[in-house]
Amino acid sequence: RVLDDEVPSKYQSASFRNEEMLSSSLESVGIVLLTSCCWDESVHEAACKRLAKDLLVGSIVIDYGDRLSNFPAFGKAPIFTDVCPTSWNPKQKFFVYQKE
Image (cartoon, rainbow, N blue to C red; front, side, top):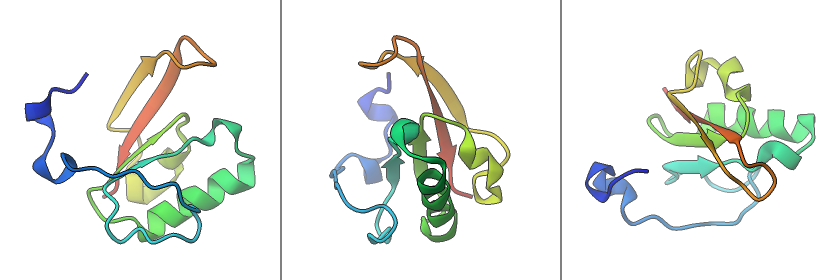
């Protein structure tokens, strides 16, 4: 839904990394997609705490839930929400946050 000319140049050369969220470097991360719908509460909470502490200001986090609203580093509410189809839910809600 985003046109190429709307994407900031720093995100136009994205790479995808499949790494351990709780221990990998977040030094150069600009966008994080949390696949948290299948995580237990403690793992999700630990990931959110790690992002609040170590993610660069201005970075974007996309999640299936609104847990990041509980962390002041991400403001009180998502900057954007949308509903999109997934393989498990034709109307899956997505929450987009920006680190402050």
